Image (cartoon, rainbow, N blue to C red):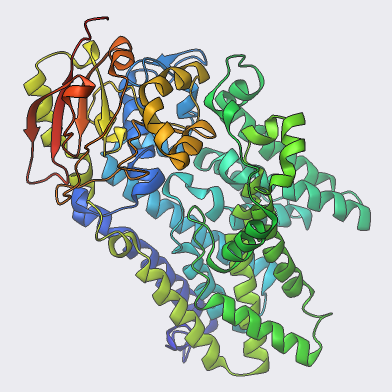
Length: 568
């Protein structure tokens, strides 16, 4: 429990600091070790990871269009997915997947992200937040727990890199012209996402600059640094810029609709986000950090430390305001604005809450310092130790231990057996999946008519909708999910609902499915990979060819052939 300050005991100050920092660095490295030891037998997040991004990198690298033009398409997906849908080729995570096997690329990304998250938060706290020499154990402890948060994997340093960026920008604001600051601002755009993190960080920093300039005087070096970093992001994300500003073809994002929550549901979502966080920015702050921050708030109130702890209470307000903004972005009161300005639907401005991991952990550090000054060091030690335990318990190998491993999820040997059975070049036919994610077929080289992507041509969405129209009409939630978003262009079946992972232990059967397989056939569809048996296959012009199983796979795959209709 006292591990953080015991490492300093009976040592010189510098030696103690190095021991603490080394301890944190070793824990971060050990956290990534399972991916290299277990390899494809490692467990990892499925949502917005195995079901999408990891397969995207593989498809992109193998497509030959890594450096394709902004008008290029990738034939393997939906008969020609725009190359721009897979993002920039200047992203570091893309190159990790181009150079290393997927699991090791994933492990390297985890390691790199967490190392720089640790360094960034430590540097920010030491230089600009908690400068006392005796508080080294708080800085290292908070930086370590921050670095171990279960971030969204393909986001890279989009959220966990914010403390490092803020450290560099505050250095420049303070008059530090060291090269290291500009190296940070230059390299971060190569290993993070603009729309999934740094757009919100930089726009907040521009607002900070305006307020700062009004209160003091314009800080031109800081402004130039912000402009420089923004320009770099726009250059790196040139495909996104082109798609957003210059593409004339309507995409699935044009039918995205977000403003639907009532006032009560928006309020409820505010407190849900404030207390529990969000799946893409899991701050795991509920059990330890949140109570600690309120204890510190009580101390500040009792001792009337408002003036001395201005940053502390300002971060409290900002933390709640970010959750409030997130929830009320989905409030139906936005409807008139979204109708007048459609880009408000195409871009998710709710993501300002992606600033919360940095805000919450800086607030955690300040809270620990306040408690340390007012009460007892042992309470602070316990809080740091407890939060470290919480972070370790949120490791993917623990959280997703009941989900398929990487090997079982992608089931390469099983899908290779299916290729050999079909005995046709994969580019000569198209497939769709039922009860499993289409990313699995894509990862294994099949050409799919279904997909999960951030955007794709709206005309294709409407064409694909004809295949599943009857099923959508049976299920209001599925209809709303597809029509008002459509990122998952899946073969939805009413009897399955929004479930996409029926493993071989499942006893589920489809009995009343109604698909327009004539349209599917006209689109090039020849086979259906179903994770569950389809009892009325014949009525849907589907012929069961064979059932495939493999000991390494999580699935039983029923291979159906789509038969040509007499009217086709």
